[in-house]
Length: 212
Ligand SMILES: N[C@@H](CCC(=O)N[C@@H](CS)C(=O)NCC(=O)O)C(=O)O
Image 1 (cartoon, rainbow, N blue to C red):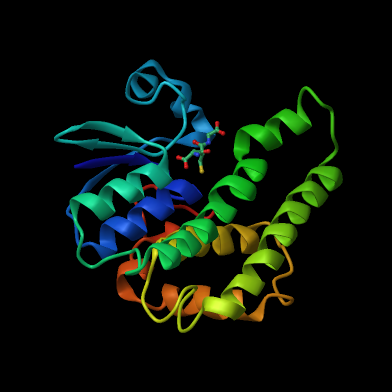
Image 2: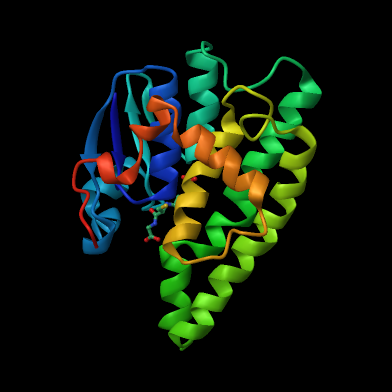
């Protein structure tokens, strides 16, 4: 299996976390987002959207990280990243989607570039935009974690919610977002990051990682 991704990309980070938790062997192929490799002919042949990650499997190329995580859950059921009841699974998926649908896309590289370029926004306005969507999503997640969390975002077992939360927390720190209003979220993210399978997925430990 080959994961085409970028060390600092949140969606690649999510995918690495799930692969590691499930102990699935994979190689990594670096798609340098800063160099625009995601738009290259070679990469868009794998993912016509020109976005990482793309996972090459024996069944073909899979894209969209949340769909990849669901595929991993079906293909490698143990250890499970979804809980045992339909209602609990819906809650975990809702937490994951809060990140995947309502925070991450608004702060993605191409969106920020569009705000800066065609829409002519200055950096302070862009920073405020980023902080706004993180704050709104994290405030909701904080309440959900208060209701359903334990050691991790949902109960005491790692789930798809943690796979999504950890990279978003990392990204929030990178953007300098104030996370002090979300103590339960921060605790859940830190607890997950202390697990070796999650720690091994950290951007700093990936090929191509640098201090930029
Ligand atoms: N919904 C997609 C989003 C993928 C995505 O936005 N990837 C980002 C990196 S985190 C990317 O490739 N950005 C390149 C760009 O914006 O040009 C997924 O979850 O896979």
